[in-house]
Length: 133
Image (cartoon, rainbow, N blue to C red):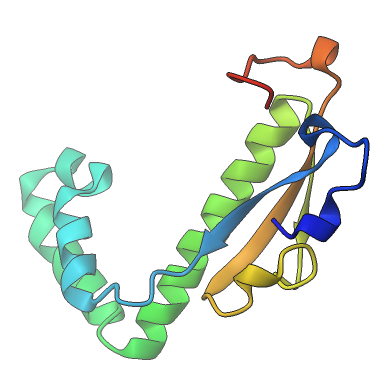
């Protein structure tokens, strides 16, 4: 974090923290096929359906544009999971559109979104974090 974000007399427990959701740049079509073969969906379907499912999915994502769209969808799902977990735990969380706003070190990375999470008072936390977090 940028030192300018920490004000004199302010403890780290009073600062928000951030979770970055990034797109995996070197995730290839081969990586996607590996993912399909080991996915819960694929492993639990009847054997007769596996070949058709695998062919359909690999043809559907056979070009770079479709693979990029799939990766963005996966990042959006991950974002929803993080935001949903924060809500369930009673944490205030919001998406930050521009990763350079709260932390300039994120500007050169392939960030999908940045989630800002506000800390809770120590007595109201629904979970315990180690140390002073």
